[in-house]
Image (cartoon, rainbow, N blue to C red; front, top):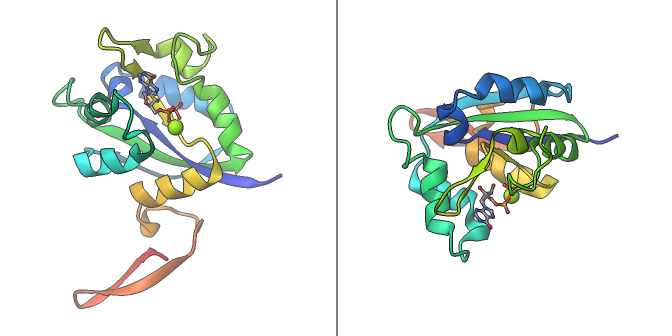
Length: 170
Ligand code: IDP
Ligand code: MG
């Protein structure tokens, strides 16, 4: 079995609906370990980089606003980010998260149970979950610095930063 890691985000609608505990309980059924976590106020730059593959979609602007939590405002305009690691982690966590469209998602998946489609047509599906190993690597490196993750997962290098050294993704 292959050990994988992936990025999970509790999106701002999940934060606003106070679903952090419920979501973590559902995810814990997969018996994965959390190797990094933090709360993030998502900048426009980070939001656009995270969803760059969807930049030509008609809903891209609203999707960027959504992941930034703009429609919810203080104190809900943030995400809780996690790096999970475990056997076959991506497929297993995607199954627990459920299908992208919350109305089509298995009703006992996270998105099926808690997601909705807004009147503007955005899928508010409460979690992000990397979909394959290369996407997971790109996303983990985008959201986390090497020293924010307790296990070493990808290669790193040291660079000179000010008077000292800093470890960055190679
Ligand atoms: P995923 O989150 O299941 O991997 P992606 O296709 O990567 O799905 O889309 C990223 C996010 O963009 C979705 O989670 C959802 O919030 C939003 N989204 C995707 N497709 C649509 C759509 O057709 N209408 C509205 N929102 C969408
Ligand atoms: Mg995706």
